[in-house]
Image 1: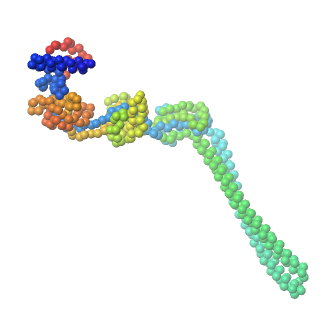
Image 2: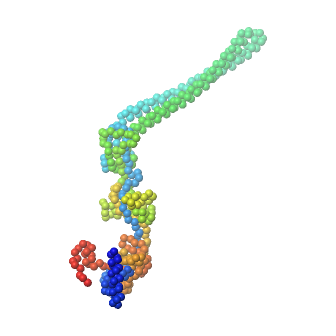
Image 3: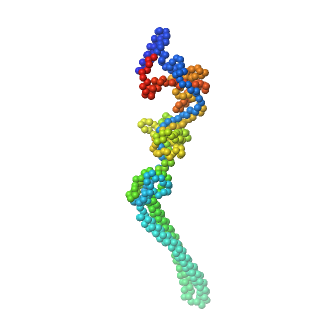
Length: 431
């Protein structure tokens, strides 16, 4: 509606000018696109500075949070139940990996360990006895077989001699029958002895296998008892600071399906920044880009960092789509930071080096065109320029200016500056 009023006013003034044949004095105060405020540019209305070649940095600004890296925080719990006999840390204490943090009562575990060790000793003794006595019995059985085989050979020779004498009538049939019987008896005894030897060998192999199995089981039981005993002594898995303690000496911890956490260790040397970058800017961000950030606890310090990676899954909050960008922190400054600190981050996504640039206050735009008040050889003119990248204070001038040009920055009237500062400039004079 307001734009319509201004348009009607302009048409009215134009019509009046056309009717009178001269320009209305009110038209002199209208700021037309591509024109300065007055028809004649006044040098005293501008501060002129030379255009210079400089680096223009394209940046992405975002907020983030100092976070712990994966593995930098460890929750330590009990894997066995019992009374907490000793707690060696307090909140804020620094511990090294392997330091003893706590000890749980383990008298019953020591007794179980002694019992399992004795059982292993008994099983190993029985196995050793089997291995030593079994071969002796087998050796004895083999010797018995050898003796019977020798007797069989002698009995066989006696049988052959008696058979010859019997044919000559010098030995009765009864003597021959007795010799035959002796040979048969010895063969039968040898057969039985060989079967007994086979049984003894099988039995020895079975007894050794069984003894080894019993010893292995006893050894496993002992190892289990040693493992349970080791659970009673809780050590630090990483270097870190005790950040949380939930159980004190004398209290009982109960181990269930999930181990109760009673000490949390945090390694404050392993920090990173999680930056939340808007979806409109994420396309400019890439791993390896440099960044700086500030935190409220050190407002005058700039912390350098490097983009590590970009998480592919978006984070949507209050209908705003952001992507998590992980920032690596320079180790030299990491001791000044703490987890969950809020950060203001500036990521440099590109640099154009040694390009012609002008202060952003010197560039005016109207529609798709950009204009600059330029000074060359003490002559003032309004030039149309093509601009490129912008940073916090300067605009890249792609074309339209020469390196020898100076550009004008509008000087605000004193009363306007006082008004912006909230001062009372008094009533303005009417033109």
